[in-house]
Image 1 (cartoon, helix red, strand yellow):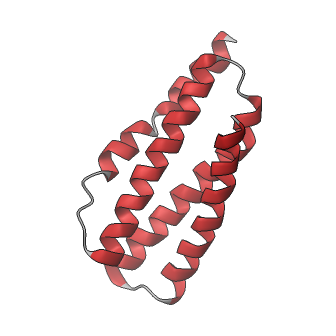
Image 2: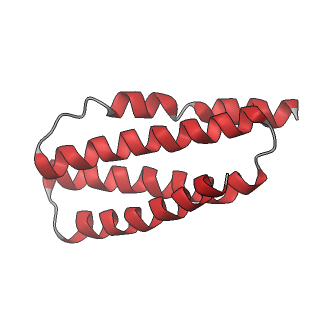
Image 3: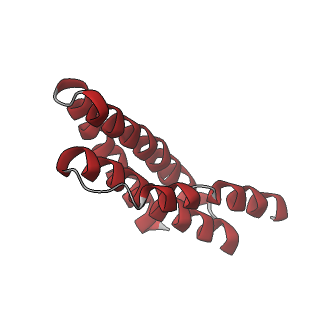
Length: 111
């Protein structure tokens, strides 16, 4: 769980950089994609940073790993598409993994 917390902090730092790039360099569709990637990366990075040390059940830990993989796929797919013109093929897969929030909620309810 320590590694997930560190990954969360790393994600927040990258998100700030992406946000600055979107605000000062990118334009049009690239600005939108990078800004959205930064938003998701910062929010989920902060969540990983806060929740990883508190994850007690196996279900909660699996959910956090799903969130980490999901936000990585989602944000990197959008960013690479904006910067290098690649496909956003992995964005829907990453976005689907972000539904792991529901798994985390169930883990909390079941204790």
